[in-house]
Amino acid sequence: MADTSEKVGLLRVLGPAHVWALGVGIVLVGEYMGWNFGVGKGGAYAALIACWFAGILYTCVAMIDSEVTSTVAAAGGQYTQANHIVGALMAFNVGLYLVFAYTMLEAANAWTVGFLVQTVGGLAGHEGTLNDDPFIVLSIMFLAWLNYRGVLATLTFNLVITAFAFVAIILLFLMTAPFTAPDLMQHAELMSGQAALPYGWLGILAAMHFGLWYYLGIEGTTQAAEEVRSPARSLPFGTLAGIMTLVIAATLTWFVCVGLMPWEYLGTAGTPLFDAARLSGSSFLVWLLGIGTLFATLASANGCINDASRAWFSMGRDRYLPSWFGAVHPKYRTPYRAIIFLVPIALLFALKLPLDQIITFSILSGLLGYTFMPLNMIMFRRKWPLDTIKRGYVHPFHPIPAILLLALCAVTYFAVFLGYGTQLVAMVGFYVVASLWFHFWRYRFVNRGAQFTMPWPKPKGY
Amino acid sequence: MMDFWDYLEYAAWAGSAIFGLLIVADWIKTDTTYSEEMLTSSREGELEAMTEQHKL
Image (cartoon, rainbow over all chains, first blue to last red; front, side):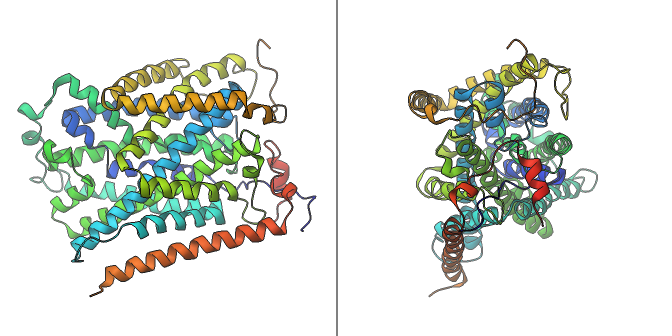
């Protein structure tokens, strides 16, 4: 056995660009695929309203997260925030929301990598259907290995492929926009008459669910809190730059796609940005967006492994789960057991469960997490007002963003209930059962006293 | 008749197995080399001191 007196912990090696790459990397795949199902639900204008409506929701998320995480600078993100600000049962639930949302999203991304390789194989003349299983497994194993070996390499890799995928969207816009190709876009023809709002205002409500796809996962930047060199600066900077990037990318994506494809086709397309590149007639853009789609998918899976493992690790470290999961690799300084443990779960989700169910459960877990955030923010400001502890970032107009986020969550619940009522009830039922298990059994092992390590004064009113 | 894509399938399985083995081999080596007390010694709030101790 090696020297046991030494302590090991995660390494502070990341900068704001890595935070940006983590947040945008998880999300950008939503621009490449998925958002367009909202067009099928309510037409092009409904998808744009959903895009900006969700943009407001996520700007609130980004601002709230930036303030709390720049202060609660520890791994676990929202789980750790709940632990310090709300209480044990909330923290346990939020931890589970995070792990399920990210692991299921990782599985969906791996499935998509398999689908992309299968499609390219078919287009390249492969006879019969290519088996996508080995490519699904390879993407999960490679990214798990990368995460195992160190956070700096993992998120630098994410930075490169995410930047590539974002630049690809910008170039697609520049090369198809009216000022460079005057006759290519057909917005007026494709969005007038019955095509404007094919299902009326109800269609807009139905499209809201898919508005989340443009931004789902930006809150993942908080998981890097224990590994950034300067949490007070890097986390707000990376997160807010991330949401700005996504609003730009989402709007450009919408503009290009609805100008090139009729809503009936776009609403069911598997890879809308790639299809837009094909319609542009430029082989350069076809290659660029093809590689961009693959990179965006890998970046998302990579960020999800990073985030799910940090949440699981933190729960283990605080004894919410067996402390075995709270181990840090002495050489690579990563939560290696949490990374390993989540690999077979992601493989199971990716290989055995239907894609639409995985994505729905991932989004629902995310939505439960967003509902926690405004309540957390209000409690944070009440217990520790601005003059009691120093924050890295103070978000403006409090409590308006928190109230707005709560209201938008309520609207989104209603929209989700219309489309996926059974899954919503099943998911809530699962968390109720998990909460009962935690309350009556697991809570006795939680080391509450050892957790309050932040050098904060006593909360107001206590 | 096997084509490029069939070989790519086998290569993907082989790559997956290699990454899996690399992870598991290092996991076993780490868990047998270091004590459990050290591996689970990370505590929230002790980061700054540890970062200073760490030598790159």
